[in-house]
Image (tube, rainbow, N blue to C red):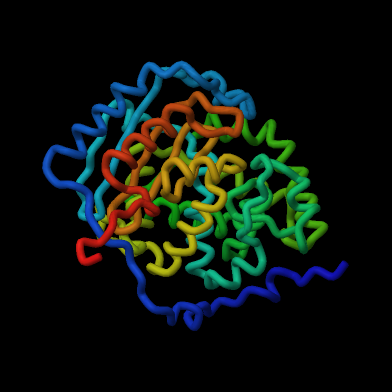
Length: 343
């Protein structure tokens, strides 16, 4: 089997790929107190939900209080609406994946990253190695663990520390402030991430990573950056705002990079339940086993939720319920429409 080395496929100049027409979403979030009232309502409605369990993947996450529940929305104009435990920090885990993908698309160009990593949903659990073996050249998508490890491995830098600086600084720009490592979760994950180590070894067979140990280390560190629901809402709003952080005014990535990032979030952001999520909520989203969910409504804003109990696929139970409620009440579903008055 011949597999083209990833560094021969990628190039540093992706500007030629970005000469594309501009198509943007329309509409805005309501102004005044309406959004805050709905955030408060969602928190009240779903705060007592009892379903789901904390993840057992990493011991440090299993002991987090299952009562924690925070919701935040950030408008593209910079307005912030928050309720509950929206400023409690937690390890972002897989919620980091779309933002790392965006940074690499910005660096190399979206089409080149797509050709190396893949973008199709696997329909399998997030840690599945079968998905790698079934695919052409080991390609999966950047929202599942093997594809995310391969994506992280592409980070530019002369050594792993330089790569880490690129990733940490880039993800922090999405949040609007410097993010720190959750040391307890990092130590726990580093001691028990055997599945990811196996995935990296398999990816090395396909020549999608050069150094499996270094690749897993980078991936683990990015997953253990500490964020809040407020941070996630800001990060989602940055993707919804054409790559400009609405709180800092800093351009993090180009607008077309956001478009491709939101596409992979919609396709595979909630793993094997992504179809159910899109059917019910109609928005790009990304979950993590730490209990966070980030959602972006293009042209409108971002939602961030935090609640540790997860369903069987690894998605926050309360976060899904709150996001569905807010999507319906705020009219965010990308697929919803009404007949034109000119019809």
